[in-house]
Image (cartoon, rainbow, N blue to C red; front, side, top):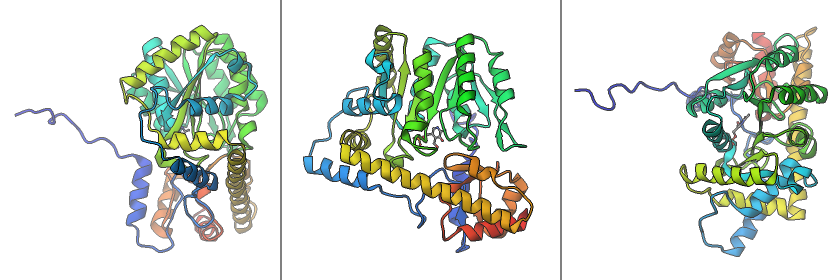
Length: 399
Ligand code: PLP
């Protein structure tokens, strides 16, 4: 007889977690996983930041009980996040036009935003870059939206197909939701220039679109301040602006699930009505967010000496990735005389769209136990001084 389960098909495996499973099953001692979206230090370890350790000590010393947080999260955290994301002196904060809620990582922030949009702009469609972070499409589809793509990556230049992108944005109907990567585009590493961002803001204004800025890598391109510029500029020139941000990478707090969702309204009254609705969405989903990661981030951000320590450690991560980019490009150029790999050094963030084909990725796995996403996305942050030569040799042999 038919049951509930009869019509349930097996869902497709997550492509990236699939790589990790295959990697763990591989017995080659030289195996390397460049398919991940995680920063590793030069010894191949996920770092425990000193600022985090110090904050943890202070939190433990306080011996606080594990109470519930307010629906919208730890107030000290929401406050500190607003200052970080929008800039302390942003007029938007002075005018109380931004509403910020703690979220379960960057993913949870996107989902709060998606649920909010579905409720209050149900006929909108969503536009993501081609390609984009692989969860964007599914997340917005599961929230009930039709998801389309706008042109983004230009394989010939390893950069942005800006004419294609802006041309498509200029055709979108009002209230189309446009997902934009605020910095360090995942998966391509190709970001817009300042002048191109200005054009995007102009088109968003002209056509009354709904921009949703996803910022999962603040600090990994040029620095906290500089990487946050796009959110600041957007928020000062337009509303609504939706922002999801994540501390998974920048605090190396992946499993604690710390992020936030913010929305910039036209005035304080709109912002407070919006906040009340965001709380409904959270209350009916998971009631209120977890406390530990938010306490860590709030402690670091609100304590000047820990804040400085964090910025230094984040700079260390960023500089190490830059070094790996340069070494990778130099070594590949040396082994493949005449080919230009300098594009690797122009990309931002943790990833490089290498241009490797799916077949080449397959060969790297089968012949060298080097694991890369089939699109050719390499996690540069998983390269280190011990494994770089092995990876370069392998890539040079299959190119
Ligand atoms: N958005 C982008 C573009 C990402 O790359 C990621 C993480 O890989 C996220 C959102 C999700 O971040 P989190 O792990 O904090 O949920």
